[in-house]
Image (tube, rainbow, N blue to C red; front, side, top):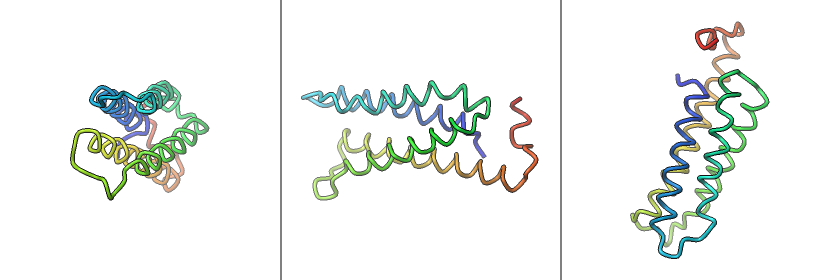
Length: 124
């Protein structure tokens, strides 16, 4: 199992790199393509608090990650989908958000089952 701060760091880097790549590959360069890298920077800033096991930050990051995943998947139109760079990068960012949210929930459930906080003892 991956710790939430590691999954958050990986997801944030995917959002930053893929979002910037999608922005620079687009010929008209709309500013809305910079929302994913900005969200990635916000998630990367929350990594320190996730490492310190702040539950409020964990729940907020989980909600933002799920929201970002849904919004990225809504941007994909199945009728006009082609396997070009822009659509592939948006799909990659959406899947990364869902995998990160799955990792957050899985670590929360595993900690709940153990009830002794032994999952995070190696981090402290």
